[in-house]
Each structure stands twice: as C-alpha cells, then as structure tokens.
Length: 398
Image 1 (cartoon, rainbow, N blue to C red):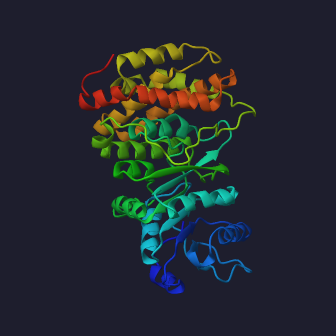
Image 2 (cartoon, one colour; image 1 turned 90 degrees about the horizontal axis):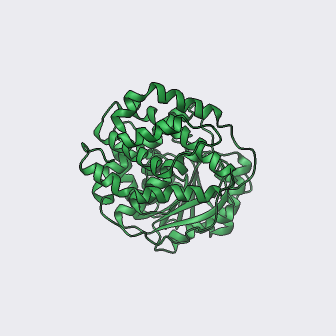
Image 3 (cartoon, one colour; image 1 turned 90 degrees about the vertical axis):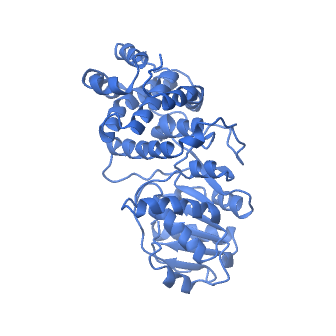
C-alpha cells in the first residue's frame, strides 16, 4: 500500500475541494493499473476520485483523474498497521468521505464489484464494507478453521473473510483503525495485521459484506504455514484478549448489509493428500503431550488419543472438539501458560489434523461451505465454554 510520509507534497497535487473517494492501491503492473484506473473513472466521477499508487500514472489516463505516485509501505499479503495509519492521514488531509483499500493482486477482482464496496460507504450508513470471495475448495483454510469461526462466535459477525485485503472505510472507521494502528507503529510493529470487523463491532459501526467474485491470492515470499498461522492467530488472540469485556456479553447476531447466503467455495478438483498431515499430527501426539496437557483439559486429550488411533480415510475431528481446542489455546495465550511462540507452534499439528478431517468430510460427499458453516456453528455453541474458562481458568471443564 502507499505510504503517507510525503503527504504535504501529494496533497499539493490534489484539488483541495476534497475527494469523495480516496483509493489506495498496492503495487501492480502498468497494464493492471491502467485497467484499474479506467474502471474507477468509469464508475465514479473523475473529479471525486483521488488515487494513490506506488506505480507511475500510465499514459492515456483520464486527464481529470487526480493521481499521486508514492512509495509502498510493504508487499504484505494483507493490510497492516502502517496501511491504516496512512489511510486515515490521507483521507483527513484530502477531506475524503470514503477510503477504498485494495491489497496485492486486487486487479484480479471483478472490477465492477469494487463499485459495491465503495458505494456502500459513500451512500451511508455503512462504515466498513468487506469483500467476500469465491475461492478454490481448499484455499483460505486458516480463515475457515480459525479466523471466521472465532470472529463469528465472539463478535457476532457473519463476515466470511474478517482479514480481507480489499475493504472500504468511512472516515470515522479509518480514524478508529488508525488509532489502534498507531499503538503498533509506535512500537515498531508496522507490519502487524489489524482486525477491522472486531473494531467495527465494538464501536457499534455499520458493517457490509459484498460478493466480489474470484480473487488471485497473493503468495507471500518465504513464510509458510509455520510462520503465517502463528502470526495471524496470535494477532487475533491478542485482539480478542483486549476486547474481552465486549464479547463476554451476549449479543444477537446482527444484520449485515448485502450478506452473502450462497456458497463461496468452488467444488471440484483434486483433493490434497492427507497422509503427511496425519503423520505430522501423530508425531506431535507423541512428542507434544507435555505441552498439550498444559493447555487442554482431559476430555480434549482423550479425544485426541482416539483420533491418533484412527485410520486416514476414517479420520474425523468433531467440530465441538476443534472449537474447544482453539478456545483453550486462546485462553493459554491470554494466561501465558507457556511461551506464546511455542504455544502457537503446538497448535499447527492440531490445525493440520483439522484440515485432514475437513478434506475427508468434503471428499466423502459433504458440501465444503456447509462443513465450514457447521464448524462456525460449533464455535457459537461452545461460546459458553470459553466464557466460563475465561472467568475461572483454573477449573478444567469436563
């Protein structure tokens, strides 16, 4: 995303009558940028747009378009703290009413769908418009297994992709996120992810979810599951801990504008081989008993013992067991039962066991999206479990 360091120079290039929509783009090719700008100027009056991009303005662009080429903060696969600080500074400086933030590979989106994101905020009352994607059947499983179920259960939000890299913010939403983000940037954690859906829920702001179709997923260079899962799960755990006073109270499931009720995950294609996942899980069951026994109650350890003795194609992790495992790891994170890095590392083989179970369930005929919704429902049903354990952490529930 673009950085706000040279704000004074950039705003000198902009018309000070204000921008209705401020757009922040991640790096892309000149061809992609030209297509993106053509769509934006076709969808919105050029005089109401202000676009910031790390790339140079392509030739033959609309001369009425206000555009500034600025440095990128990072090539992160998702939006981070520095992006949100930057977004608010630019929006405030340019008197924007809405900020459209588009992550890496955003040019692969159905560009007409971006109009829905921006229009929802410009037309009000939406403060946060979030993208909902059509993904391949086994893509985004950290989201499906942990991020979506936790956010739905604890923050009463049906937003399917709470860490979506393509969102639109009202000015007050941008201001709130910048305030949170500044606590990270002040401690040299500018790359830390934030959780806009959680912030909007706590603030009582209006949330919208919009189908934007398929999206090419940005592949981070270097980090794999062993880095990404602890990073995003630890960040979400910390945010949940900070907002405990909010989510421990009962809250009705809110209406979300343009909520999507149809399946978003394509079926078909070859299923991944679960053998390496189950081998990792069984090896961890042998080697991580000491750590797991510090985190999980006896009933969950018994469930894992049964799973470790189950053959590959018959391997099924009960949804309620998975929900309790994640909740217990959340509690252990809060209490610092063990080193947090070791804790989140010990969650990885359990996550792989869930993935293997998910693959077995869906290849046996169950609908992929239906199973993910069943997992989310289990997290909701087990919310009383985490609330009880949060308040009385020394008492293991049977």
